[in-house]
Image 1 (cartoon, one colour):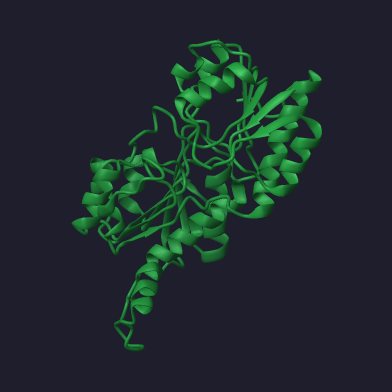
Image 2 (tube, rainbow, N blue to C red):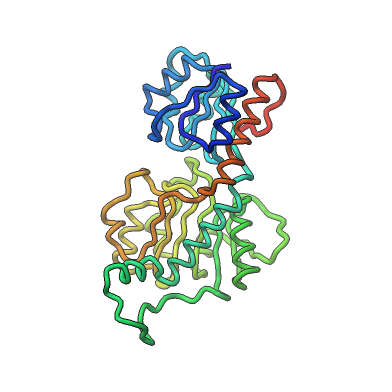
Length: 313
């Protein structure tokens, strides 16, 4: 079975792919362009793609040999799943493996944004720190504050548990469907949540419905001291509206691990002191990337062996 792996993976996963499949690996980490995606669909039996690969509707308009897209990652917003299925391909992903690592990054960003950690490190590295002072770099206290979680799936729940049990935070959440939770949390409408919390964490999937769900109107509902944390997908937030709100000081700060047009980050956003920016580190540990890769391998094995796919989308 010919398999194209679109990015470099961990050594363990690449070794298994080479041993078990006729696997070929792209030699650079840039996303597949549309022409590459079309060629791959016509050439290989299965593709192991990931974030950014151009598998939108146009990719499925030509000759197609492939029957499986074994995505590396939970999010499949780079794949037109309906077009893929209409062309006879199954689509799988790697849920579960990313939950704790992504929740950890959400708390990292929350704490960094609240305590102005990036701003302080830049000041120190520039040589501008003159020593401790009672009113220097005053940030926001986190313990005991109100946290709003938008999207109470696996990752949202993992964030909420860390916040409640680790920092004594009061959790309010907005979700598409009712949740039965094993920790204290109160549901609320999105508008009410935004207006009543000190920190907002976005943990929703990227869908047409969630695109720009946080725009100028939603940011205007937030308290002037509140911080917005995004570990979902970049286009969940209207980036231009966020830049405007941060520039005007209408919210206290933001922590971002994802961006609307990755890897492009607007210079206006980079120039701001009241935003913490990470280069999409959500799942960036070797053991997590190993686990994600092994889930993708399990989907490939099942397809090869003609058994039900473990993680269909």
